[in-house]
Every structure is written in structure tokens, then in C-alpha cells.
Image (tube, rainbow, N blue to C red):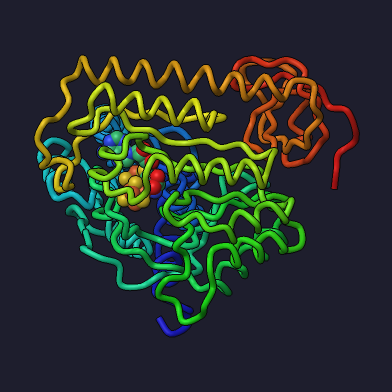
Length: 470
Ligand code: SAH
Ligand code: SF4
Ligand code: F3S
């Protein structure tokens, strides 16, 4: 093992040998498929899984009947769990057709003992189960799964260290997420993330910046700094680095044209951060600022640690300092004890802030969280009524914000070929708005000035008004 820099690389090399021998016997390459169920952080983990798999010699495919299939799960709401169980039901058929196939389940859902039990009982064909804290051990588990006979299962209660340098296979050539921290210490009372992702840990700034530089050298133009509560970045590190400092430095790396970040918490959104965004045009004109509720009493029971007025003031300060910014949000409807009057407060914030977009979720009871133990869970018909009111307000405001951009010219980064409209590509503005323009695959990853000519609610059809911008 001494010739290898670390244990992970040793197991990747070992797996390479296994894949090579089996491919030869099969007379075809071995394939692997990674399915992501969760948030951006979950997606970034999937890129690490794919990195390991492709380094081990697997051909990565989107087809689930691959020789190795792994579900990277999410458990933030019950419907995320149900989606995984639903999909797993089909997997036994693939396995019958290809008895050599190995199936793995990892990610947030596996940090819950009851889910692991359910998989073992109802889906006994699953060969490998691991959680979030030991993802870096994946190369070892992978070897064990192909070499051994029984199921490999390893769930850790907490993370022991931050492992740098796992191979990564990026989904997009021109943009990439970057973890700046892991875990969460906020314990919003409805949320399971702190339990399945553990305590907050920040990566060293020099490691992050090194990664940004490597990505830039590899042609990446847009990065997204990822964490559950990015504004508390730096806590626990030896240096005095803060999130605004890191953001500014990341945005100064040569070759990086756009920097996004997800997710800030309103309670920690400092004037410094507003200033840094305002003064650095590389930083996207977009702030995703989860509101959750506009009612003070609900916010208090959610343990969000801001009031309705503080949130409105913050949003207005952001809009005042950065006039072309878009503000998007997350809203939960049906939190225990929520009344129609509480929903009125949420509607009031929607009207006052005028969100450019919002994700609206129905409250989902998560076992082990404080909210799950609260009495007066809201009856379903009342939840639905509240949800529809919120959705109507969100959509109306988003359309208003959107139509106001009609006729403007913005710089847009082309992301992909538009599969619904032949001859079109989809591009994204700094403010996160999507615009479809005539074009082809050769434009992917390039910036163009685009005129927003035809508003279609939350997105635009447009036209390119000039040459590619370097
Ligand atoms: N750290 C981020 C994102 C957390 S999960 C934040 O602080 O906002 C993404 C969104 O899922 C949350 O913003 C919240 O709106 C929603 N969510 C989390 N737990 C939920 C639950 N139990 N029921 C419904 N929605 C939930
Ligand atoms: Fe969950 Fe709150 Fe942490 Fe976001 S900040 S991950 S909502 S506990
Ligand atoms: Fe889901 Fe885990 Fe992300 S629970 S939202 S995948 S941190």
C-alpha cells in the first residue's frame, strides 16, 4: 500500500483490476449508473461517486440496468424517501436479467436506521449500503461488494475527517459546485439535515481556492459555493476567514466568470456580504434566501431566529444595494399549528419582497425532529388551501418580476441543447433566469449577449445580439 498516496487510491487501483478482468471475460466494458435524489450537495457527492467509478474503469451510463447501480438518496421530505423505494422496486427485474449486477444505496436516507432496516427487509437484493459521513470510503466498499459474497453495510454516526482529493467526474464541463462546508448546526425544528449530515465543518480556504483554480484551469467558468448555511463558513477554522472574504477570493480567480452560492441563512446575512456581492460583478446577481414562513410565531417554533420584519428589511436592503439582483426563496406550508392568519403573513412577505421565484413545500413530518413531536399537526385540507394561496401569490409575483425584464440585453451562459424546441439552446443569466435562444451544441459553455424578447412566465425566448464574450 506504500506506493499509494492514500487508501482510497489503493482501492481504486484494486477495483480497476477487477473491472479489467471482468470486462475481458464479458467481452464488453462494465457500466455504472449513479442516480441523484437530493440537493446540490447530494449532486456533488454523486460526482465523486462517478469520479471513483470512472477511475476504476467503469463506463458511466444513465441507464439503470448497469453492472453497478447506486442510488444517492435524500430524506428531506417523505416524498423523497418514497421516490427511492418506488424506484428500488424495479431494480430486482434488472438484477434478474443480469445476475452479476451490484446495487448500492447511499446518502442521507441511509443515516436513518429505520430506512436501512426497510431496505434489508424489503429489498434484500441490495448489495451495498453506506451513509453520508463515510462516502470517501466508497472505493473500499466497491471492492468489497465485487469481491465478497454478502452484503456490505457501513453507516457512521459522525464524520471523522474531511477527505480532499477524491476523483470527481463533473456533470457539466463549464460549471461546477464546490463544497465549502459540510453539515449544519442550525436545527430548524422541522429539518432532518443536521441529523443526517452531522455538525457543521468548514473546509480550509486554501483547499477551496486550490479547487477553484484547478476547475478554472480545466475550463470551468461558473462555480457554486455549496453549504447548508454558507454565511457561517469559517467557524472552527484556525484562520479568521469569513464567507464574504472567501466569496470575494473565489470570484477573483482568473478564468472564473460567475460565482454563485447556496444556501445563505437570513439570520447571518451580513452587510459585508451584501457589499461584496454589490462590488464584484463576477458574483451572480441572485440571492436564494429561504423564508420558510412569514409568521413570527411559526418562525419562532421553526427555530429560524429571525422575525418577519427582519426578513423584509434584509430583502429590501439587498434590493436597494444591488438593484438588479433576483431574490428567490423556499416556503413551507402546513407547519404544526399554522393558521390561516399565519399564511396571511407569509403572503404579506411574498407581496412586499416580490420574489423572482420560490419553491413551495408542504410540511413533511420527519422522525426525530422537534416539530414531529409538536401537537396540532395541520389537517390536510387546510394545508392544501394554504398551499394554493401561497402558490398563486408566488407565481403572480414571479411573472411580474420576470416581465419587467422584457427587451433588456443580458449576458447569458449557454448550458444545454433545448430538447423541447429543436434548434434552440438554453442559457442562464446572472440572475438565474433561463432564456432559450436559437443555437446548437457548439455554443455550450460560452457567454453571449442575449436580448430577452418573449416572456413565457418564468423564462424567456430571446435572441443573441452579439459575438461570444470571453
Ligand atoms: N439549508 C438550506 C436548505 C435545506 S433543505 C436552508 O436552510 O434553507 C431545502 C428546503 O427544504 C428548505 O429550505 C425547506 O424549505 C425545505 N424543507 C426542509 N425540511 C422540510 C420538511 N420537513 N418539510 C417540508 N419542507 C422542508
Ligand atoms: Fe435544515 Fe435549517 Fe440547516 Fe437549512 S439551516 S439545513 S433548513 S436545519
Ligand atoms: Fe436531501 Fe440530504 Fe440534501 S436530506 S436536501 S440530500 S443534505
